[in-house]
Image (cartoon, rainbow, N blue to C red):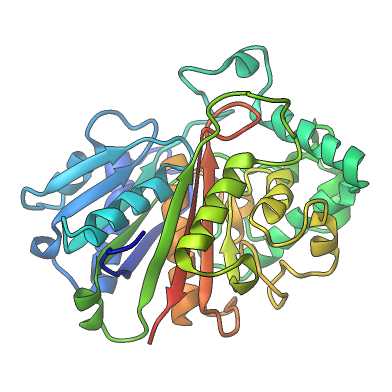
Length: 379
């Protein structure tokens, strides 16, 4: 997009994901907001507007959160876009500043989840007939195995990597290391997917403060810029589907790369939507980190591990942090900002300068919404 103002991320804050069974969602979210504003060095009267992501928390969640923090009257927009809601909220905040509507904006992602599978109010036909998310990803894994000879171990190794990364992240929920055998022999969920290859529900919150170039210049330390953000959806089954490819991921990534003026080869670090290990491997290919069918080789070579060519989910990802839907995408940006600033102590990706955030959500074998955002480190 041309003619837009430059937008940076001034501050980040997170409430590590967990159960929080006896805590109100508003009380989960407020510490993340306070942390992000403290990190940005701003006060309540500096914020022009807020975009708030959630799925299950009822009406006007943003107003409920900020009222308890004694915010003045500002523009508040609540956003639902399934599991891509958090990154969609970041995108809307970015656009509101880039187009000149606001100068400083607060983004909040918050969710309090229950137990069991995610319950969609209006499921599509496939989900109604029992094709739940584990089944969908199992179908995709089986097809990838059939077409490209991918081994079950390739998917399981992603679960091992996730736990290794999480062991280095104090914000991760599940930090105990796992062996390949432990992942492979954990309880079967939907063949070839086992328990340790699935993310868990969780509750939590994350927040960001975004601002103009002038606002970012006033903050000490390196700036983190949003270079592009693309949102894509697959709306109809016009032809036979390729179960080994998420078309919306490929579409959003292509657009984000083009708008940022870079290619997949320029990405130093990625936080992507790993609701299941299958998804992570397929998203490697959809994001262009490797050729189609090359996901297993990327895993085997250690390219996506810390110290590899393009580390993926150094935070531990959804697999090890759990998945509070509205907060997940926003939390990805927290990790990437720490990485680009050089503040990810104990898990720092060396000389990380260009990062990518990816999230997707919705029902069916293709995502209802996929968002890809490119970030860079400035001086």
